[in-house]
Length: 142
Ligand SMILES: Cc1cc2nc3c(=O)[nH]c(=O)nc-3n(C[C@H](O)[C@H](O)[C@H](O)COP(=O)(O)O)c2cc1C
Image (cartoon, rainbow, N blue to C red; front, top):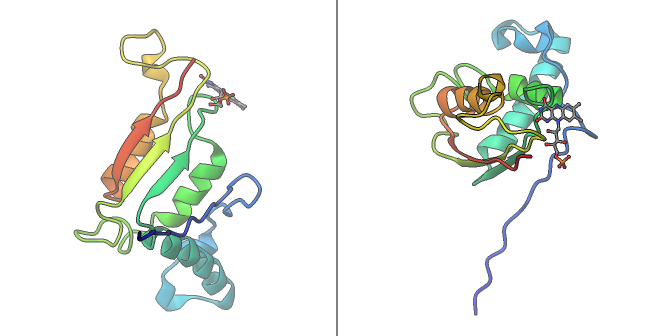
């Protein structure tokens, strides 16, 4: 019998947060100072990790109608135009991503709070539209 083993990388953004994106990490690599190069290198570590994943599971509890700021910081680091975004054929294209989008209430279509749902619509824009990932949501609510 053959057994297949994979590697699971667990990135806990609460205990090990990605830094907020600063101007240092957001400048042209061709003109980097040492400080800017270090900040940019950290972005590339997160991007490499994502690009090498065969599949991704993201926990995205709703915090005040939107995603946790820790997840936003990670996304700001990993969305890099010319590498992960704005590309016809990036390494991320088609990678399956499942988002567990839990929330205390319900924001389902037809409910009174439907218009206050800024998790699924936002993550669809970033993960599917910008990063070309193949996104699927699981929504535990109430
Ligand atoms: C700071 C904070 C803000 C929250 N904001 C919302 C919210 O706007 N809407 C909502 O339905 N639930 C909200 N929740 C509830 C979380 O989404 C919920 O606790 C989370 O999805 C995990 O589910 P669990 O508590 O059943 O494990 C909030 C929780 C916290 C801690």
